[in-house]
Amino acid sequence: MSRIEALAEHYAKHIATPWQRTVAGAQRVVMIVYDKELERTLRARKMAFENATHQAGHDWFEIDLSDAFAKWMASDEYRDAYFESPEDLQIKLDAEFPGFLANLLRQTLTNPEVTDKSVVDVFGLASLSALARVSEDLKIIERDIRGRLVGFFPGTFESNNYLLLHARD
Image 1 (cartoon, one colour):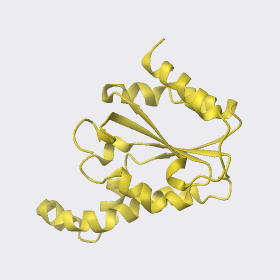
Image 2: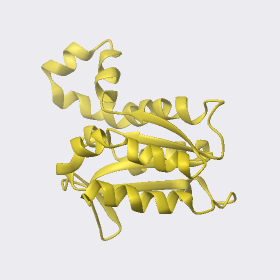
Image 3: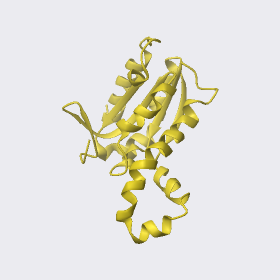
Image 4: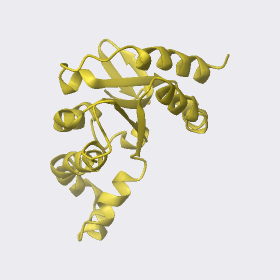
């Protein structure tokens, strides 16, 4: 059995357990942590996770944040100036990008089809490395999580910290 198949099997057992409805938004987040080398393999086999979700009686809604930074930059009228002086971008990135990510997530989380029995799966977290802290973005949207939010996270979990691509928490 491959590592992705083993991960999907473990996920299937977890997602099939009865859900408590009275838990806070932060407790509705499930992180699937896997080796960074498996990113492409996981994406190619994500149907195993989707099938497990459906077999457990839940709906599957998918979000891919891979191009979130590109969309955010493309919408900024001063983007060309930031490319000339990237060091000037950090303040704006810290102030505005988390809200932009939260809005992208909220579009799916608040969709009328998403219920307290739905699973919203987030791919593309690796693309946020050095741009955002996933934990901070989750705090912004945790009230909008109705069912479960599953983050596919290429990295490690050490000392109560998720290390994205082994680079930073």
